[in-house]
Amino acid sequence: MSEILVLVDHTDGVIRKTTAELLTFARRLGEPAAVFVGAGIDSARDALRQYGAEKIYVLDDPELSDYLVVPKAEALAQLVEQAQPAAVLIPSHAEGKEIAGRVAIKASSGLITDAVDIEAGDNGPITTQSVFAGSYTVTATVTHGTPIITVKPNSVTPEAVDAAATEDHFNPVISESAKTAKIVDRSPREATGRPELTEAAIVVSGGRGTGGKFEPVEDFADSLGAAVGASRAAVDSGWYPHAFQIGQTGKTVSPQLYIATGISGAIQHRAGMQTSKTIVAVNKDDEAPIFELVDFGVVGDLHAVLPRAAAQVRARKG
Image (cartoon, rainbow, N blue to C red; front, side, top):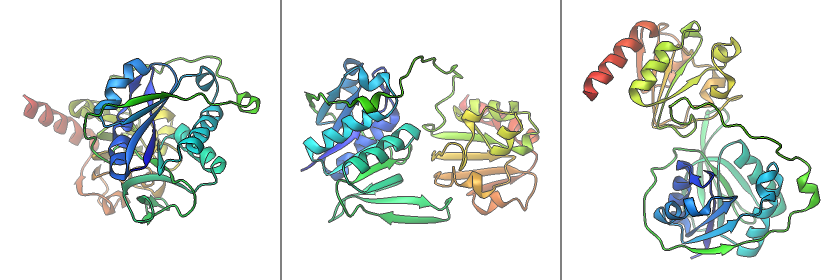
């Protein structure tokens, strides 16, 4: 079977759930081979093996982490040329999609972004995507070169399968032109105690209907162990930070459960959450467009509904 390269998403060696998901998809297509860029492989090795990595390419040159994405893209393109994998799977976040686009150009290969499912096909991987702001669901396959595919978080349940991965240290040659944007400082974002928005299994979002009072949204999210999101209207009004905006000009999420509260359901917002597995809306306007999309709807004022819902959740948890 051919190798399937998986670009590891990690922070100082602590792998993110997205990596486990990509390795799960990779096993459907061939032999998973993790590509670990940066420092911290000793912390990541066991987790990568736990989710089925049969090989680990280690790229620990400091230049790959000291600059923005271009050196990583060059390195991955060189590895693709050497390893000749059957496909490359990359997390579908801002950095991942930029790396994927650059690698596809360098490798003269087709690119598919924001896949929510991948299956093996006779002529290569077959992906499922939600396109045109969620208006259509399509299947696609790359017809030229090595398929470069970015995959949305929460698209598959990670499956643990122990593997005795071998390691190969790969030393790419980074061009001077790739080192024109250097990272001069890093500061971690203040921890909220909630899951990362794009990786959370449950997301509770608030919109214009909050009136700027996000406390009920946050409390309900905390009762569920969920992440908190916001609509563009709430962000533009200064009620919640832009980092938590969901939609076409914000982040795209695909959780198991998405709860929209006080959100009308404009197409811009729907584009960022329409692939969620189960969608619930709370809105006092029974004609709000969001109700066309949901699995369950509650017509009511979120300031009355959410505190009662949070109390019920906590009571059932005991």
